[in-house]
Length: 415
Ligand SMILES: Nc1ncnc2c1ncn2[C@@H]1O[C@H](COP(=O)(O)OP(=O)(O)O)[C@@H](O)[C@H]1O
Ligand SMILES: [Mg+2]
Image (cartoon, rainbow, N blue to C red; front, side):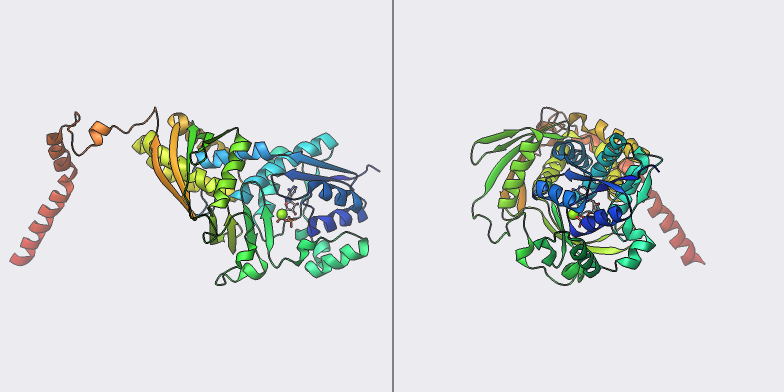
């Protein structure tokens, strides 16, 4: 009989460790795949754990640069902000991890893929849609949606019991009363004690950023330079320090952002499956980049292009959130976004201070801002007398409406 080989998206946590063992007990040859998306965890330890659980092979793939350049920067170009608040830090990694997982499956000569996402969340969709896109004959193992698994595992207690029985090492993070997802872009916190959306979380929870109370009493002044919508240089003007290169730039901006308490949000969001969910996020660098980039667009984008972009950004955020990153609709809209970014080059000056990202200036060689025209003190070639005719024609329909109303009122009186 052909050996059944499965590639499991392995996080090193309790769920995926139990899944790994469970699959082995069902006679699968399990290849574990860990995506390094900048989570500050010891991935070699996770690898050892997977091997201890019986994985035949463990892949650790460094996805950090790919994540920044092809996912985070793309989302920022698109000004993607789900429901006007969430910068999509988890959604972005899932599409990336899932795509890499398919590559590994192809290398390993199998079409069986597994993940440990629950059946109530968005992540299951993000994984499975990406698999379907890149491996049309995919066979999906998603234990949390399978009767057999659900009969055996009702929740954490059953998982822990199984882990103890099977000699799976249980890590200290188990004591956490909420779940955490970490990557280079953000840390997200949800479920457990956070499920009551009226309750403030403890300050101890936050791992990425300082609280505004603890942030320095001094401003940090920076300048971010963009080329075609992509950040290419970061200067810390307070320290005369300059950083280039996507990873270096993003990591340094994370450092500055976290020191200055930037990027904490506490929201209730609408999941794809229709459930509302309370989530807390810390997203330092991307929060600053989002604002800086948006500001640069104010001088480099044509008015109507900018207003059209404002219409499609929420659609793009929804596409990303729901897991349709690799879709024709995403390609279609990103073609328009990329076109819009051709002139989005220049510098934005920013002050970081106690949770605030304060834009203080912007400049660009492509700037459409014309000081002479914009000035209230100069004519600058703008003929103010023409504005008379412009408003007269623009307001014509109001006048016509007024005339009609007057005629009607008179008719009423004479009746
Ligand atoms: N860094 C990663 N590499 C590979 N797969 C991952 C990674 N992070 C998460 N996954 C997959 O995504 C699923 C959902 O992730 P998450 O909700 O964070 O659960 P977990 O508690 O396992 O971290 C995991 O069960 C796992 O299959
Ligand atoms: Mg996780």
